[in-house]
Length: 560
Ligand SMILES: [Zn+2]
View 1 (spheres, rainbow, N blue to C red):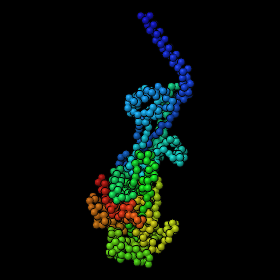
View 2: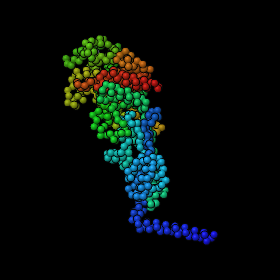
View 3: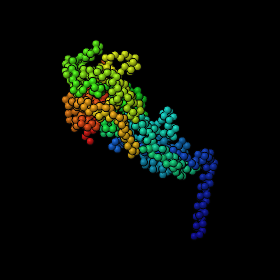
View 4: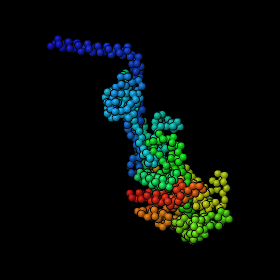
């Protein structure tokens, strides 16, 4: 028994010794140089552990953008041949395509488990974080995450970002980078001389970024984008934009710019997108400058009433042609089109049927200086200061601007300025803000997209109040109500669950093209909650946009 044990033990020992010697021979002699090099790389490495980026949520908590985790199998260039061969076998067995070199970017869960359990040398399994956005929904507003440009690296380097960090590009992802981006951590990885991981520990724990809640309503955004998109397609328009604001606090409930793009396909299609003459990368809602057309009559109305040049009861006679100046002598659209006039009208009636003559006279009596001041007071020709980059400030027509572009300003130029022509150019966001300010009793709220950072409310912020008397405001609102009751929008707005006010515009920008269609609206009539502005390039008449406005208002009030 003892003898048997002895020989068994001796045999095992001899076997082990033989193996050991063989291994030593292999290590020291056959591949000694390679092992020596590897031993120099091993022992401990410090890796950056990216912090999870905060989510972007809509006002109701629906996810607009978030990080999603996937895995990649990293295969080092110095992976030993037997391990490479084994990996090829595993890939084949698990049905994963792999060229035999480089990382395996789309491993199946089964392959991940097998690769981990086999512990192949110089083969590691690593998590990869990707940002999943909303694709084609509000790409200009939500933005995307991508590698830094050299310019961005200059400023982000000082903030401690690693060079390969991905940062917010455009939209809310860029605007709220500071909140969304957490603080990266570090991980110390210990490996043995064969490259196998023997232990790992966090040097510094990564601090995840904050979730950001936008004022945007995902469902309303979808409705606006779909309704406007259908309109643009049906009318063969090259582009358009729409903005819906909360009258009570300046929050952006929806903002669409069309054509748009898919943030998920941005990198792959960048060349096409940037070369596209329809400018899909431009956010027309804040960068598109459009003549407001007759929607500007609301500004002329407020100015004329508040400057005291007329009252809500003052009547002006539409004679078809305005003959105060020798030149110009512009006509009312009704006279030009049908040879008729609107007759004697009050301000409310003139808003309802958009009489040019009334507003030529009102504008002339107010004068360009006061008219321009009122436009600015209502936020036109001024950047709103929304958090998004690249906002245009627009232009309020007047002698200074005309001179600055080498033109001549005539006394009679005030007539066309008063009905939204001349050099007046505003963004759809400004038109929505102007409408919100007017119908919100003159209260100016800072336009914003950020509702909450983490759990903290960020707005509203008052910008003061434009003084408009209740009687004057009523006169303007009554005119807008009549547009939706008996005027050009009566049919489109007939089935709405609430009463609304609106004003349409149609601005000719080039002789050989259809006019741009413009529409502003608010609802409910008695206690306004939302204001919107729509623009369709070459959409013709602003009243055609009534169906789009009605769909947006219906969607909003369905859920209130
Ligand atoms: Zn008229």
